[in-house]
Each structure stands twice: as structure tokens, then as C-alpha cells.
Image (tube, rainbow, N blue to C red; front, side):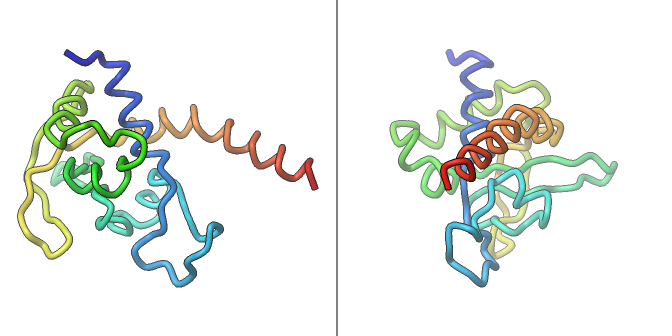
Length: 142
């Protein structure tokens, strides 16, 4: 059975993947965003990648994750050995997560994993300092 640490690591891998938003006009490296940035700017901007943001009726924000799309779109090179079932099981290890119905790309009903949106802030606070450091290092090399 996977530990919460492994589950958190999987969520981090998903949310810090670099993606081109579905509506991107430029297809350059500069146009790419991290998943957590893309869904905060526009909740369904990367629904094709299997991750979007949902507001429930009581005002709670969730990250909806479709394990099949995420495996095929975001984790194909890093976690290719994981099955969608394993991804789903690992994500459900995270506190507060649940399986819930949502709407996919063509508004088709899907059963996806809902993760509390507070995980975005946790991952962003761990990730952003590293990114800032990397960008600083890149500019130092010029």
C-alpha cells in the first residue's frame, strides 16, 4: 500500500508538470505553464490534460483529476508504469480526497478524483522557490 508521501509526490508530479494551456495561441516553451498555475488562472484551461478546478455548491474548491487522461498526458514519461487505477488509489490516500462525478471535455459525465484545493498552495509554496532559483541561475549564466 502506498504511503501518503508517495501520494503527495504523485500529486506534486501532476501539479508541477509543464503544460501548454488548451487555448494557447503560441506553442513555445514560454507559453507553457505549470498545471497548478494554469488551473488557477482559468479553471478548465487544461481539461484535455485531465486536471481542472471545480467549485462545489457550498463554495469549496477542488482539483478534479481524471486518472486516465493524467496518465496519458502528464505522467507518460515520469510514471509510465502506473495504471490509472493505481493513480486513482494513490490520490485517494490524500486527506480529504474523494471520488466524485464531474464533466469531462465534451461535458461527458466522468468519475474523477477530487482533491481539496489547499494542496495547490502547499505544492506551490514548495515548488515556487525552486523555480525562482532556477530562473535566477539561468539569468546568471547569460
